[in-house]
Length: 405
Ligand SMILES: Cc1cc2nc3c(=O)[nH]c(=O)nc-3n(C[C@H](O)[C@H](O)[C@H](O)COP(=O)(O)OP(=O)(O)OC[C@H]3O[C@@H](n4cnc5c(N)ncnc54)[C@H](O)[C@@H]3O)c2cc1C
Image (cartoon, rainbow, N blue to C red; front, top):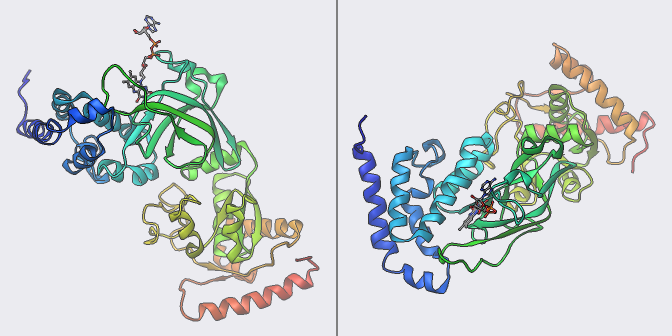
């Protein structure tokens, strides 16, 4: 067996050694004595690529082998173990958990910024009452609408007070014991999530080790699979702009393919986002312009886009096709809008007719029979077309005797 290091492994060792000697050694004593976290050192470490050591290159990481990684950890620890543990808890625990077990969307959302060192990661398993016996943990995550609610606490968490991304374990199915534990990705700033004061430890003074507390932290579904799973556990509803619209038909088609029930509540276009924000529905199936600012502001989580390609406005959000649902490649249905407050009975009848039409092999023709047009392009005539559709269907809704606010 050949134990000699490859030239690449030697180069990584050299890089880490050089960084530790030049950037860490001259200044770290001050941080250690003051029990202070050396944030600048970590920012600079990010530029070396070592905070993305194990992340695959496709997600912006260095994709190192484990020998190279161990050499880098060894070199940092040789000079200062606080910087060492900060780096390896970020890499081995948090980032690697997402790399190995995260969904495609979680990888796309978190790995690039973790790999570049723009965000530090933490990982929470240990609790005040459970260390070696990790399965004795008490932190619970309970499905509630379109999200999980976390309550409990974690102890001895490296980077707890400085991390922006945290992978934490919580019991989701107590009856299954150690098999009933799930991992959740949390982000700094989530309501009800807080880090305690750093412990005064006997050593590793410049590393941040603290408790994490969860007080009704709401974790929205991370992807379509999770959303469907949540819909199976508790009743969900979605807001879409009217009936027969792209947003409505997309959601109805998702329901059919996933064989799951989610109640449709029609809204005026501008209000479908507000419905989910205000908690009137758990999901909003809506167009991009009103949703994007809410997603960027952290008030909504984007689960999927219905288009064939990812949207340039939210490039990190996967398409439905990418998440395993077929038939959304060139989805450009246009339809009609109904006033909010239309009777739920009429909504249900229309939904079931539309669902039948969606299942038909001659789906395009059937939709035209319903007065819905298959419109593959979105030209300038689109607005005029919509206006006439709204007029036509408003009349039809009125004639049907439906009551509307
Ligand atoms: C600096 C530092 C950083 C940490 N960072 C993190 C982190 O980022 N994330 C995280 O989740 N946790 C973290 N931890 C927690 C660490 O993982 C726990 O300390 C560890 O799991 C042990 O748990 P415990 O301290 O409760 O010890 P215990 O489980 O109480 O163990 C105490 C002693 O008893 C022994 N023992 C336990 N059970 C048995 C048994 N059945 N038979 C024989 N001997 C046994 C153990 O070997 C140990 O010597 C950190 C801890 C420290 C000190």
